[in-house]
Length: 345
Image (cartoon, rainbow, N blue to C red; front, side, top):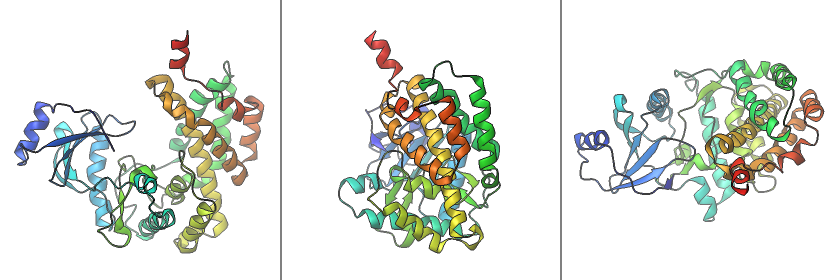
């Protein structure tokens, strides 16, 4: 979370704080990236006020998953008080030492990633990890996420693209993802990366890895969060670190995941799926929300997609891209903001 301009609390939020005995607390506002959720730190209280009035499903999931993750021995912000009717909660303040911040200030990258991988292994080995009411990461969900690529990214680089592309895109991914979509092995947090992880130095073991932004979690394959960590859309790992951390995970993985080749294959297919989805999301954020800053990451994610398709040997999907979107990587690097174009005109 990053500091936001000061705002005035609503009457409802102020009354909630007063009812919990914090009416006189000094508040510092924060904002979450790409989220309508609002946060205010109660200075000196070790608490944060979360305001989430527009997403009752996500709010309920946050409360449910916070309790679940802590019960499993992991560190998610605990919920100390809540008002479901108004989407308000007082949550534990785990501090500002996100992995991203730690890396900027010289914290040991290798140690941080070892801790994060070990936290995932802890989660994946616990048979209770999937015993929580969350949506299944099923085939339709995977395919609907990929539709964002066909709806937003592909037309941005190939205006007038035939409707046949979206149909064929979905059909080819359906075959690639069908076996993976049947795996509902664990809780998948979906955005397990350096901006959503904290180093909690005062805690021990895997509890030193704090967890944020988990309300969109699903029940799905173990490899997804590992891939999200190691193939970050916005930062490079030190040379060789991805391979080392993947090997660390495989060496200690639950037996039910199969052999190393099985794990690696799912890892690379899921990487390709995620990178394709993110390309569509970044274009959509620009076109719908005017958030053109995301466009600078598109060439990087396009290269990640190409690499993942090759590693997963998804040749029919690669062929489809080359047929309908020739030179798609080069075209991706030329995507410009519609906001910028309109101002230039």
